[in-house]
Structures are given as C-alpha cells and as structure tokens.
Image 1 (cartoon, rainbow, N blue to C red):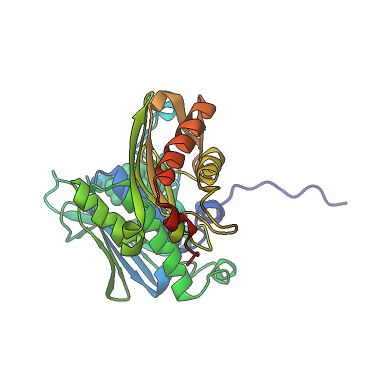
Image 2: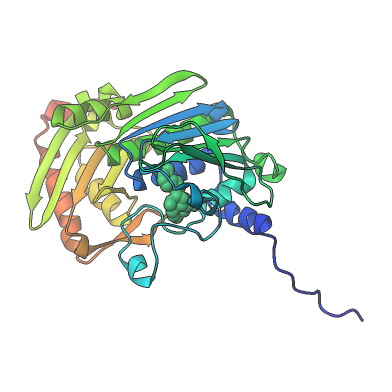
Length: 346
Ligand code: ADP
Ligand code: MG
C-alpha cells in the first residue's frame, strides 16, 4: 500500500496562476486592476492603448506617483503592496486596491512590462515577466514621471483560459465598459482609450457642470443626456445628483445604469429596488430605466467594502436611503409631462 501523496509547496508561478484564475477572467479584468492602480497612484491623466480587444496588447500609462526602482520587482510579487501595512490600515482602507495580488497574477498569465519613474528619480526603470519564475531584472528605460504597464499575449501560457475569450469586439466592449464606469466615478481624471490605433474614448478632465455633462454624453451617448432629467437633492445628510433617463429613453437591457455611492460604482439590491419602484408607473413592462446617479453619504453610515467584487454596499439605515432614493426619483419623474410618459418605447 502506498502512503499518502507528499505535500509540496507550490512554485510562486503556479500559486500566482491559481490566484489569477480568480481575478483575471478577460482583458477587461486586467484593465480594471491597472486603472485602479493608476487612480490609487494619484494619476490625473490615463492613456489606454488596446490591440485585438486587449488580448494582444493592453497598455495603461499614467502620470501618477510612479514606483521607486528598488520597489519594481516587489510590485510584481504576490502579497506585496504599498497601500496597507497593518490591521489598522486594513480597517480603514481608502484605496481601490490593497491585496497586492493583481500585478503578480497578471504577470503569471501574460507578458508584463512595468516601466516607472518617480519625481525624485533621474530616470525611469523597467522590469518584465514572461509568466516565468525568475527574479525580475531592473533595467534603465525612458518614461516621464508616472507608470506604464504593458500586458501582452494574455493567457499565452494558459491555453485552457484562452479558450474562454470571446470575439475581439466583445472583449473590447467589456474593456470599454470598465473604462466608462471608472471615468464616471472620476470626473477629475482624463481618460483616453484607443483600440487598434483608433480613438475610442477621449475624456478630458471635467472641472465644472458643463464639462461633467459633456463626459456623461461621451460615455452614455448624446441621446441619453438629451432625454434625461437632471437630479440634485440634499436631505438628512444624503445627497443625490446626476441624471435619470426619461421613460421614453428606456432600454431593452439594463445596460445604461450607473449608480455610485461615495464615488464607488455599486450594483446594490436596495438601490435597484428603489429605482425600479420609482419608475414603476411610467415604464412599460420589460423595459429598463437609464440613469447616472451619485449618492453621497457620510462614510460612517455606509460600508462599501462588504464585497469588493460584487459591488454591494451596506447602509446603516437602509430604509431611510431607500425612501430617499425612491422619493427623489419618483418626484423627478412625476414632473415629466404626461405625453412623454405615454409615448411608445423605442
Ligand atoms: P495593490 O494594488 O493591491 O497594492 P497590485 O499588485 O495591483 O496590488 O500592485 C502592487 C503595488 O505596485 C501597489 O501597491 C503599488 O505600490 C504599485 N503599483 C502598481 N501599479 C502602479 C501605478 N500605476 N503607479 C504607481 N504604483 C503602482
Ligand atoms: Mg492593484
């Protein structure tokens, strides 16, 4: 009788590839991680270059704080982060990332090059992975202050994962959706997205109301903004602002719905219910409302870290938030002229 199989430590590469299985599903998930890193680094402008839906190439370049040369290999290591140090930090984390896993995971399933320069450094430095187990070698490079992460040939070494990728256009649509969500969360940051050498989104820093409206039009389409009601209400420590589409601008899919709580995009049951109720009397069955809404509340009364990937939030007083949302939207939609309400859906 043979004994039990002996226990062995996984190689770092295999451990990273297993972790990648959880967070790196497609180019859009890589884009989300890279963009969040750029925002965490204080970037004011982010350029995203994509080839073949992001499978061949995804390059995110920012003008953020950069990474010190000595830290570059660590940035690619698992469980290495500059964002938290101890349990106290974890409990009041404000950055988008903190697990220290994204770059290690992506680097294990793609060819990743990280180039960065800090304001103090005389020049830029670069490290690369090829999905292999090896000490990353730091080399001099040319780059302004900030960081570029270049991800090539996603899943080149994990063919089973590669098989799940969809058509180029589908992958790009998912990736573009990630950019749109973050662009609506951060009007103060410029986003430029290019696909196969062509401009797909050019969003300049939006400092005032008019510029914010322009960004919403660029992200959601000019037709949305033309057929949306502006909302801005503040009551009992809650503030809701943004745009709700007229009932005539409903959609057959729930694909134009952006709701942010304190700058984080959420997809929350309580929120969805309040919105649905508000539209109940003015929307045809099977149609979905359109909206871009920002709820601002005291951070102490909301927990946004319940499920970082599921986009859920927990309000201390859910009933009050629900009634506030429902009441505000119901009133806004009630002001729509009856002939607008009765028009046939598109
Ligand atoms: P996390 O974001 O959870 O810390 P990541 O693997 O995404 O983990 O990144 C590891 C570290 O690399 C970050 O903590 C940060 O210090 C650094 N880093 C990654 N991307 C950037 C960037 N665009 N600008 C500056 N630093 C970055
Ligand atoms: Mg990160």
